[in-house]
Each structure stands twice: as C-alpha cells, then as structure tokens.
Image (tube, rainbow, N blue to C red; front, side, top):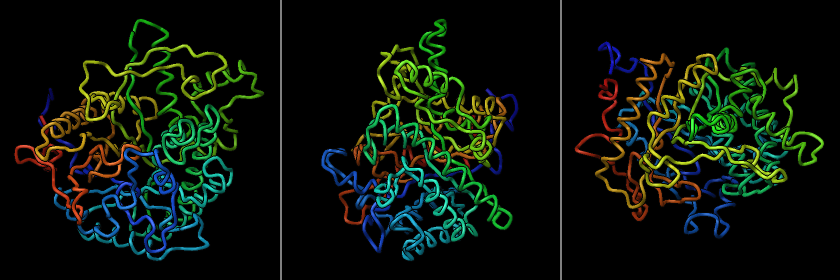
Length: 477
C-alpha cells in the first residue's frame, strides 16, 4: 500500500479535531438575553421537524460546557470546531446591543480550550441567523452583507486575540438550497430557481467583506486565518461512456462545490458551466437576464482570493446521470439537469441519503488540489450516522473512521494533497436539524432522557470511537 514507512504516518503537526454547531448543542434558546434565531422560529412551527422536536435544550451545552470539555480532553484532540450563536452575542443581529452574558459564555469556552492545549476553530455562521435580521429580509436582502461584516468585526475584535482559525460561513450551498429553495431548513422560504441564487450571491458578499475586514484591521496584530466551509459530495457518471452523464457530473459538482469555490479560490467568477446552463434556461423561460446574479468586475476583485485555507465538509458520494428538465420548469434542480443516485453496492450509514464511500473523500481532495492551486485543506466535517437508539458498542463507526483516515492518508502521501487536519462530525449526538434526535453522529452518546443529558463514549472492542486513539491514528497501514 505504502512504499515507505514514513508514508504510514500523518504529519507530526496534523490537526485532529471534532466539530459542533451552536443550535445543535447549546440549548438555552431564550436564556440570559439571547435573541431568537430562525431555527428557534422554524422549530416552534408544528410539522417542521421530526416529532416536532426542537433545539430548545439540545445537549444543554450552555449549562453543561464542563461536560463537553471533559469529552474533548478524553479524546486527546488538538482542535475543537465550534460555532458562535449570532443572536446570543447580538440579540437583534447588530452591535446596538451586546449581550455580555453571551460574550462571557464564549470567552469561557475559548479560555478553557486553550488552558487544556486545545485550539479553537470558530465558525461565525452555522445556519442560525438572528430572527430580527430575517424580519428585515435575511439573506435575500442587500443589507445582510453589512450586518454580517459588523458581526464579524465584533467577533474578531472581542475574541481574535485568542482565536486564530476562523470560518465565516458554514455550507452556503446548503443554506441557500435547503433554506430558500426547498424550504426544508430554516427560514423555510420556497422561491424555486430565484432566491437560492440571490442568497448564495449575498453570502459571497458577506464572506468577502468579513475577510477583508480581518485582513485590513486585525491580521497584522492577531495573525489568524480566515476562510469559509464548503460542502460537496464526490460525483462520478453513472455511465462514463455517455457524454451526457459525464457533462451532468460536471454540472453536479459545479452546482455544489464550485458554485462558491470558483469565485473565492478560482478566477473570481461563478463556474462557466453553471453560468451557461442557468443563462440558457433563463432565456428559454423569457427572463430578461439570467436568474443567476452577475459577479461584476468589482465584485470579482473583492471576492477572489478571500480565503487563507480551504475548508471542506464531506459525507457521501453519488453516481450521476443526465435528467432532461422541462424548459419552463424554474428550479435549482431543473437548472442542474443532473440526478445523483446511490450506488446499490455502497453501504448506508443510518440515514437513506448517506452512503459510506471513504474513497470519495480522497478523490474530492485531489479534485480540490488540481482545480484550485493546491491549497492547504482542512476537512472540517466528516462523520458516520447511526439511527437512534445507537449501540454503545459501535464497530461500524470505528471501521468507517479507520477506512476514511486511510483515504485521507493516501491523499496526503500518494496524491500530494496538502491536508492539514481532520474534524469529525460530531463531538456529541445532537439536534440534527429536521431529523431532530433520531440520528446520531456523535463520538459521545447523549442520553436525552437523562436529567443531566449524560455523555458516554461510543466504543468498540475497548477502542476509542474514532477507531483508534489520536496517537494510533497518526500511524495507519
């Protein structure tokens, strides 16, 4: 497998982390001056979430942070990725009112992590927009980039003396498609084929403004790094001999990863195949211009290069086939004309959408290297789901972790990909959005029926839940 003994080892400075998100673990939805977020509103509407479950309490990390810290130190992690709840810090989304108890909470987390030799990676936005800003138009509004930049500058100024790894936005593709196209996620807006692109456009503007603010005002003193976390499946054609399937596969990746990677890491513009596809369909529908907003020359200069590393979330892969869409159908899916399907030979991890394809991660990493100038890469989310109730003796998750880490190691040693770290999703079983508590991704089992929401490590044959300890993971064969 590996030609040299050194190739069996991850780099000595490789980052080993776990990830979480504020709404999914914190609870305390209306505690100590926190303002409501779009997920608070969304979950309080009947029929939105599995069994009408909410994140009102979740893992109650707002009160049980010491338990989370114990889990982190027990695993021997070098890094922990968390997100700030925007409305816990700024209840109305603006700096007109700062919630000091929210500031104190995140200061405590950061300081405790550093005291235990764990480096924080902070995500500023992980799906939970303040409801007050949604009431003003949310991500569809031209104002939003300014509000986000104000929030980002507040966080850089308040926490940047200790936080050196920042992620502005988590999975903008998911925010736009599930929140504004399919209404499957908060805020539950359904305007097919239009708002999805506007929201993505505004998220790019917000990210670039925040990056430039850090670069101009904070970088020289704080010496941190700023990026955004993108997500993508790996995709291969159902029939590699069929040119239509091959082209559909290119569109499939263009409409997910490249949608945001091309402007930031590429030439500053949307992918050519995406622009051409949407423009052609818009013309056929009688639209005066493309439904995909134009990245102007000025915006191109502002967006291009606004990342200090490439953060990627990967969960699964797809076989892709061409699907012809009716000319007058206006939607994100019909624009793409590419259907991703699960190969029946791939095992499924708990939920129907998640096929276990570790080699897909290696191929995605190589694609990023080849397409975007060999950037330094952090895998900021990757994980295995189990259906509740999940057994504590979790051999499947351990096998998944070992197989996945082997593919990452091959990407580094055999493909020359500059992968700097791996964050597993997630530290704890938590609120998995519209699936509520029915799906468990955690390295630690959370007993949601227990008054103290007890955390228990998943194990297999007396091994850690990653499949191996951090020291053992550094040497795989």
